[in-house]
Figure 1 (cartoon, rainbow, N blue to C red):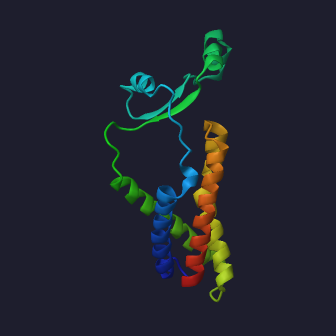
Figure 2 (cartoon, helix red, strand yellow; figure 1 turned 135 degrees about the vertical axis):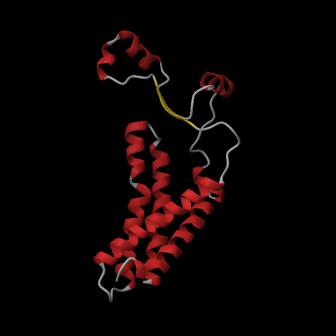
Figure 3 (cartoon, helix red, strand yellow; figure 1 turned 60 degrees about the vertical axis):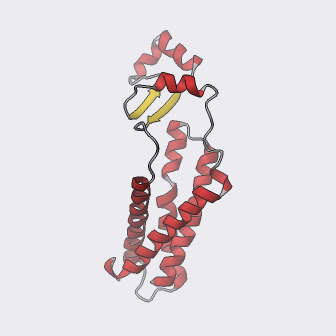
Length: 181
């Protein structure tokens, strides 16, 4: 079994994960409260206006030695402490993002196919293929969120919901591979 012989489950899983992700993010209620409004949105927008697209942190402290400075420590104590991603100005466009997400889903399916092709016997049954592909997909769709919660303050509740999404994606990917391999 080679990756090239697994083109059907790769394509089917990529398409199905794209549809599942669309349904989860557009119609399911569990991500609706992942983002909170600012209490003074206009003040925050005014303060951030002019920043080039990129990642920023407040207070900005690149050298841990700076934390010995009482002024720097006071900035952290007074808050806010934030990690900010600034996107280009303008109405959001979904086309490029949707295309990148579809390509990402195909990439995850290719990684699943690689593991299936290297670990499953040629005559492996549905459950064996399901376990391999489903586990790889779950890991691919979930584990990076832990780092986001540890280092950048992503709420653990949001990470838990992303793990639920990843479980759904893993089960669906495992099912597609088990069915089509």
